[in-house]
Length: 158
Image (cartoon, rainbow, N blue to C red):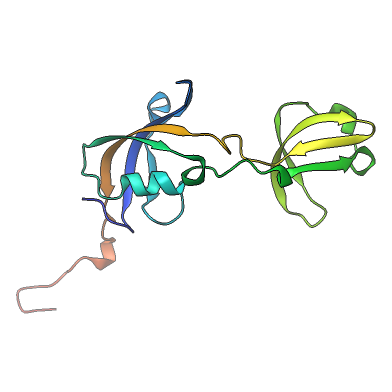
């Protein structure tokens, strides 16, 4: 049984309420590896994996607060076009990476450009969405002892 603090490998698929597939590790052929309880995945996914057995499959439905959070209107920002060079080339509706004047990097979607103002949405693409996960626990990863950690004792002791 998987416990908090253990590193695991899982395959998963995630769909929206309408059944449309959002992501799947199966399609990539590479399992997701993370440490249970370390905050490396959304909270509901972490909770779902804790207590699973190797080989077990589990289906869980995560409400927004267990997944990517509620959609927040305060993450819609307006930025004057004059603050960005090349604002005319800003892709509308596509996810982009921006850096603030303080050097902070954020992902956002430019919703529109209107009256000299760019409207950005910094919510996660899945914020506010209920998600269905299919999870398969493949392995609990045990750290291999390094060569120096092995005992090189003879019959007369170390």
